[in-house]
Structure formats: structure tokens, C-alpha cells
Length: 341
View 1 (cartoon, rainbow, N blue to C red):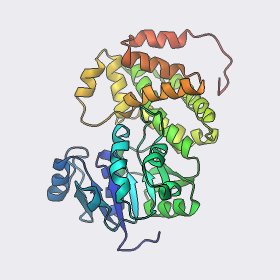
View 2 (view 1 turned 90 degrees about the vertical axis):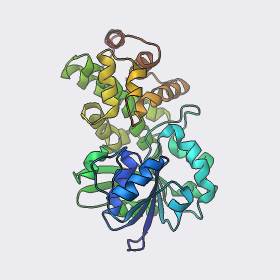
View 3 (view 1 turned 180 degrees about the vertical axis):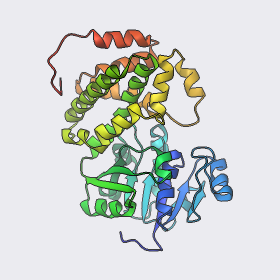
């Protein structure tokens, strides 16, 4: 894909992350059309040049347009960026598939695991999209708060795909002096890292909500990484991927950054709030809540021990007190300190 003034990108999903990516590309004078499910989001972008619902206060360039019709978003598109929440991904993809005219680069920016099938997003895409799209699938992931990307603050991400030529083209599409992209080919590892870190961020938030200190949070992050690697290896991911941007990079950001929705949910849980009330008060999706169930399902399917994931599920869905969950983690059988044990 060569850069030109006629280049056009379709961004499917106008949440904070989809809007931030759309804005980033539009700032490069690329024609971008973003699809939004919510009519009020489309109206605000078109009339006020702002996504007042999901990314308020950020001016959007004139080269960025919005629509509530998938077919309109895809007109003339050279590339598709998919950024809808994981729990509605299959539905949107089923509508999107018949509209794709040919095999074009298709980048998943969605971080999550489908609850019912335990499939990663590219696996859902392979189920739903036309067969000719299989080798066009890529994944963009890494430590990236949408608001900071929109402010032009330095950000580095990972782009994984099987077609090295397509990966290089999309890598070039995104690259700017403040937005760096590294190429990879580990689709499974990159997706697992981007999904599981949200579950660990919930746990880290609980630690902070209980005011257990920095020692406890550092231990939680480290052992969380070990769980992520164990599951990744069981699913044929490259363990080295988890030491990169889509693994430890995103894990550190989401477990410590004040802008992390998942960490914030964990903090509120640790302070004694009920999950139902927390979620009812949020406009955006905290992917970790849904991913927790799927992560536990994958762990059980693969025969992998993931005690942090197990305790997060107990807190979220079985009303287990947060302090008891932490205590049960601390009082597990003594082990040797090995990265994957």
C-alpha cells in the first residue's frame, strides 16, 4: 500500500480507541471514514468535529468523516481497521463480510476473547469473513491510551500478521515521529497479551483499592505475566511475544496507568463497590470483565493453572470478598520461583 492523497481507510468502531486511530491517520492527510453504531456519535463528529461521547475534547480533522452505514464506510477503502468491543465483534463482522469487495488489509484493534466460543478476534474473523480475507488479517496492540495518542504523545505498538508485505505496508501507514509500530508474525501471542492484561489490570486495581502497597502490585504484575506466558505457550504462541509491547508493555500500562478503565474497576471493587453499580456508571467498556470468564475457560480447556484469573472470576461473579481472594493467592502452596511455574 503506497501513501497517496487518494488513500482511504475505513475504521469500524467509534469508541475512544477507534476514534483515536482514525484521528491519527486523518492527521496524515489520509481520508478516513469511521463507522459508529450510535447516531449521536456520527452527528457530533460531522457537526462538531468531536466524539463527545467517547473521546470528548479532541478536535477531529476535516479528513475524518463518520457514518452509521457500514457500506458507506467501506466505499473506496484501501484498508479496514476494526475496533468494536469484543462482545459485539461477531455480529458486526457478519454484517461487514458481504460488503468487502476484495481482499484488503484488515486490522483488528479489538482487545478481547469471545465469551461463548473462547476464540480470539482473528479466529472469529476467520469464521465469519470470506475465505479470501484469511491472509489479510492483522492485529494492532500494545500500550496505548487513546487520549494520549490523540494528544500526539509518543506511543509504540506491535502489528502482527502472516503476510509480511501487508504488515510492512500497514506499518508504514501508521508510522509518524510520535507513533512507532513494530512488525511481528505471532497473531496468537499478540492477541492474548492484549486481552489478558485487562484481567490482570482488574486484579492490580483491587490491590490498589485495598491499599496493599507497591510491593503487592509489583508481585501481582509479575505473576500475572507468568500466567499469560503459560497460557500462550499452551496455545502455540511464541513466549518471547509476552516480553514485548503487546505483553509486558501493555500489562505495565494497564495495571498502573490512571487512565486504565480496567484498573479503575478493580480499584472500586477493592474499595467495596458492587460490580453491577460500577459498570452501570461507565460509558465505555471495561473489556477485562468479559475477558475474565473467557480467560478462565481457555485456562481450563488447555489445562493451564491461572490462579490470578481464577480469583478475579471469583470476585467478579461469585461475590468473593477481595481480601479473601488476595489471602488465598498469598497462601497457596510454596513453590520455586521460576518464570513459568
